[in-house]
Image (cartoon, rainbow, N blue to C red; front, top):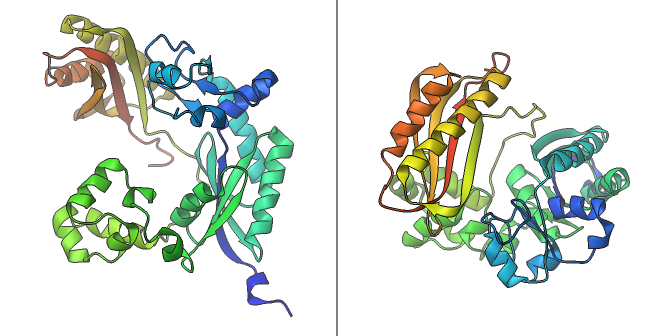
Length: 352
């Protein structure tokens, strides 16, 4: 007679490709194996741009995604810098996701390099290893797999399994593993929210889980306050959903190699980016319902402004006019190193 552990039951697995973009580049250029590789921008660390990903060898020097390329070069002078090649990563991602779907499980794609799997099995660790072997055989890429009784726990578990490993995080060991960790260790809580929680005297996962729901609702809002408390307890009931991802927005942005101080030039760039975004919308046949402008002031402070359009549109002039109205609200006394235009689109008729 089988033990209860061996009886099939539902599990959520989170599959995360290890150093995905860097790993794809190493496959394309085998001589890079074992070396510090940094992918970002046009691959020139003397230019402005940010790190898209870094190999584990580069991460040992403190290089991480989102870091300015110039800083990455200072931290790791011997790093090999490569330009971003989106189509190559998209091709590799498609191969990975097709492999996961071939395992006859529910697959919810989260991005190029990660997905949730809805699995029914009596041995989730064995299934996780099967997933790793299948992905490696099909794509030569390694992945880590988090095992959970829901999506947040599976997602967090992956970090404990990296690289190339597995880890199980469930209700049974949630507090043993997570209780004393900082709140930003939770999926869904970033540094800004963690700082706000700290201001309320909440710094650990256990403190958040045990916080008074009414207090959190009063301080953080009737919806978000209790939701953060549920995050602290690892509670979630959302199913793994195989519905194809539908993009909600389109954006274009430019990083200037020299700061712009003449705002006439900033406005000209906003017009150009608005026309590019409008072209994307026309190609998708998805009108914009909201427009946002992102500005990064020198040296590295980012702000966004947005507005809802009175009428959905794909017209470049309408999008440009909305974006320029947002530019008027920015601080024209500061130098600009990056400007971007983003639109949120209406849903296609078949998924609205």
